[in-house]
Length: 322
Image 1 (cartoon, rainbow, N blue to C red):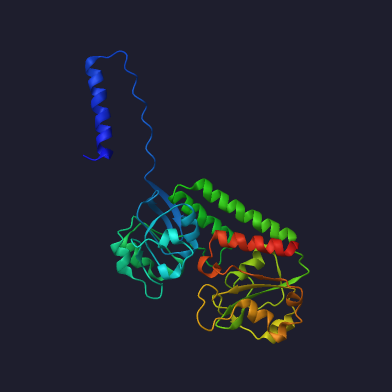
Image 2: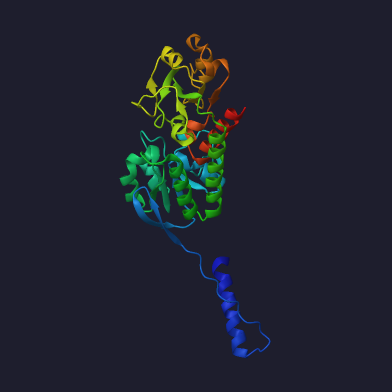
């Protein structure tokens, strides 16, 4: 008999024996503690859903949740390992964690074989939501939704995860840290100084539209930045074509740059810093002349969670204040 079953039975037998002998000196039985809730109802991207609290067998596919799950000590039974690199070894490093692969060709059989109690889907894997719910109805998607305030969406996601993994206090602290970083950056910024967002990949510089361009685009509405150039995004994820001459003509005082290739280091890789600062056409741009360039962390493109944005806003605050 396992110890998990044995101990309650032994205690019950002892209590029964004491009751039969009428032992007056026996201590009163402790009051029963209410059992912790085994499920919780949350509002994810698809509406109201009941899921287990602190589930034991978790599949996580949404990279915007990885840092939070890692920090909270959550273990996974399956994950998209090629998307993780070495950023979250506690989530992906164990050989027992099955590999779901990349979103372009996900290994659905790996999800099935992992027998999950909960699936955290969404973001890059949102196209297979229906397949995931067939495997496990307790599938949630919490990634920031298009058209919604990005800061509010990051905090909403974190609050949902806090409910599911019984980490409400930790979730509240993450949201408070984000608010503090944003407040500091807004206070330090001089709106008379113009800002441009850039995305580099494949040895090219692309334009990140204010409010739309991946990663750096959120800075503009969140911090109230003054754009050096205002154009709508055609490709928010990869950035839009722009010449270095057009960047120079916009004459930005500040540049925020996301290097999409920084973690990959493939043959022929050219770092964002080299592309921007060695471009002859940009040498007289105020941002380059004054060194007012903020490069996002190398892992930002693979992260994009609340911690990554908190660090970005802190970097902005420090740069604007210097």
